[in-house]
Amino acid sequence: MIITVANQKGGVGKTTTTINLAAACANKGRTLLIDLDPQANSTMSYVDARSVTKSMYDVLVSEELDFPDVIIETPVPNLFLAPSRIALAKLESKLIGDLDGPFRLKDRLKNTVNEYDYIFIDTPPTLGMITVNALVASTHVLVPIQSSYFALEGTDDLLETIEKIKARPNPNLQLAGVVITMHDKRTTLAKDIHDQIGHVFGDRLFNTVITKSIRLEESPAYKESIFTFAPKSSGAMEYYSLSEELLSRV
Image (cartoon, rainbow, N blue to C red; front, side, top):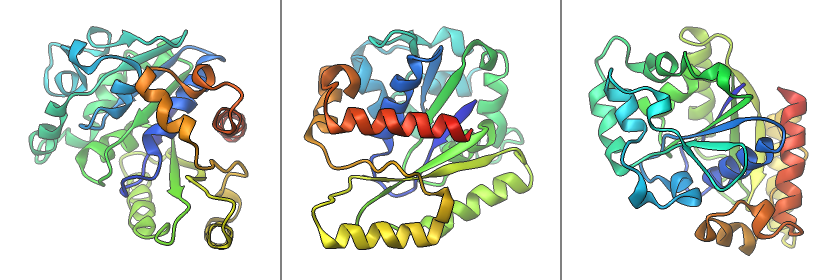
């Protein structure tokens, strides 16, 4: 099972969702977190970025490197990381025009995918070649949507991209669902937005809602998942609930 977490809008809790779902699934089986975002926030959530010498950029541009060459252990038992660096920003220009451009990640994963029970991919806030690579390599895509006035802006473009990927390069790709993040349940506006998103996505919307949480923002700074940093917090309970709901769908 390979799950890409994607949304071309920034600031929607995409990385927070990826790192904590990966940590939750690591309690159930061997899990790999692939950081495909040049900002490397998933990487920095678990390791010191200065210690990363080889990254996903090297795997995707070099025939001489493969996943085992870059994968590192995280402080979370059973969770492994394929890290990112800012160099990944150069990948778009290198892949565009190559016949195997959209398939590079899928090809590189071929000999590694069976070593893990769960694989999560964090993507940049764009619908460029990096995100396309993630979608082509995945079995499922999960879409986090921030509980805000502009929540649905650009969603049509993402869903259209998913359908295009399903039409040809990856017909097996499925939408695992949409999760509302950074929700402030105290406000009437947030409830209205929740209802609006539910109307658009129907049963594809997860029942679990991720509320705003200082603990979720703090935990990456201490290189911990929410489950060890604040195990009794609302964020920990909500991401555990989301992981259970996700696994029941895929």
